Image (cartoon, rainbow, N blue to C red; front, side, top):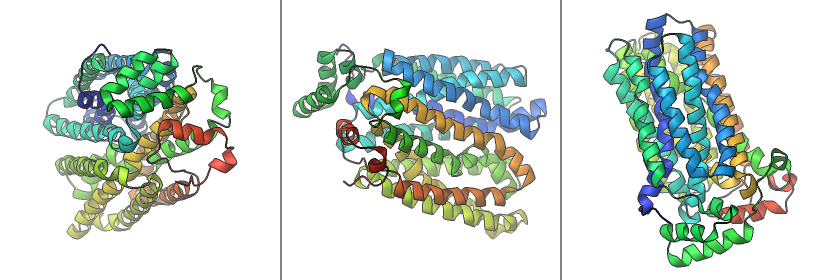
Length: 456
């Protein structure tokens, strides 16, 4: 391995793409009110500006992840940083809504690419016994990115056209990621696939003890498939069960209400507290809760089965959404107890989401897919994730105007029931297993046998 870099920095920069993801989720929250002031946009155009990023992300997730199977994980992470910087500059200097939407589509290509590449890379370089914790760094970076974005929103909320600084500031994390990507080693599993076995062994030795590195190296060699999988291979019996589980997870992560809170919490809480400043400040509070809950999640995630975290998370999230929907009308009537109760249950919802569908979804996505289609399958799962994002971002402003917040939360609570059932009856357990063990398990089983509980 030519680059001398500590394992801690490898894991840090490997996960840093999540920061870009989180920053843009958080920054649009505070930028939208200023954009509406500049151009007097209607709810439909507001939805297009928000969802433009997600349209680009659908393209970027599948494109960059599939290219990662050809050119490597590290190189595509570098390209995602470059494209992200271009989109950030364009967003900041936009002179029309059309230019802003186009810039956000470009930005989305990078964010979507990072959303697929980071879980893939982290899953491939992390040891099985701590993969949950290390892969979960991606989610921690997402939450920290959101929190920093909320702080930037607050700093520029009173600045004339401060939204330009909010959106253009995304250049900073892009530059950091580009610098870090130059220092990263390539994934050892990708190196074996392209015949660079000795280099793969050196990477493992830099990240593991000698005994662990040699054992894992032999396991990778035994399971490795040098051919790159095609789209048709996604429907083979080795890959299809994982694709079903992975796409279901990433879609459900988006449509159980979380990003409604993260994208529109300033507007939601402005309605609750009756003040735009109070809405922004309380959103920062939610960001702090999310970061702290994610840190705790990293400490416990490898101690619990993945399925149990998903199921308990859906129960808690659905309950909180139901209660918010019931209490919200009283908050609108300026009852102080109702206002603070709504805020409390939104924060509690964020805690349930943080330890389950937020962090664990991408951990499992990084574990599920067979090596020969890992890039392509991760890209498909990420594309489905961004499709769910588009649905939420595009239709929430319209639904807010037509049916109201309570009905929206009741609908998300119902979807949480579906999330619970999916985790219980469709998902299978991957905790504590190496990627090669998971692939071996899938190899000889049809989808009818695998879709269901995977006994530990």
